[in-house]
Image 1 (cartoon, rainbow, N blue to C red):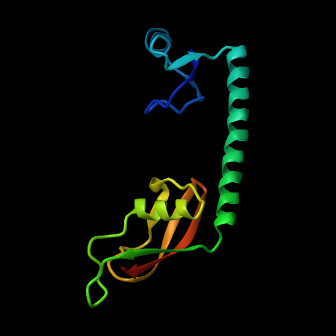
Image 2: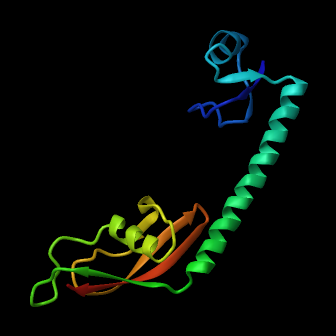
Length: 147
């Protein structure tokens, strides 16, 4: 029996895959649980259309991320931190602080998309990576100064 998976199932396949399973497994478990549908001709056409539309949306999201990266450009943000006499900062610089500074500059970036390339423990300049899309990353400069 061939079924079209509606979600990822470990050991069987991924969403929208057409897989062959035993009849009882398909009729008694996968279909009633809502994990799969019968791979009829009309359902195959419907899934093909859904995949085509999803690819179009994914391409648009990637293009938007690339445009945002180009708009950000070689941005340098400056964050103040309390520091000792030798330049070692008290505490740490967080992704939330970077996201807030970007918001002040007019870029609405979620804090979960901010990745530090190195640990920030002293005053100075650092590179911060923004994961704008799974295929688009953009680096910005972060300058940590004493308050």
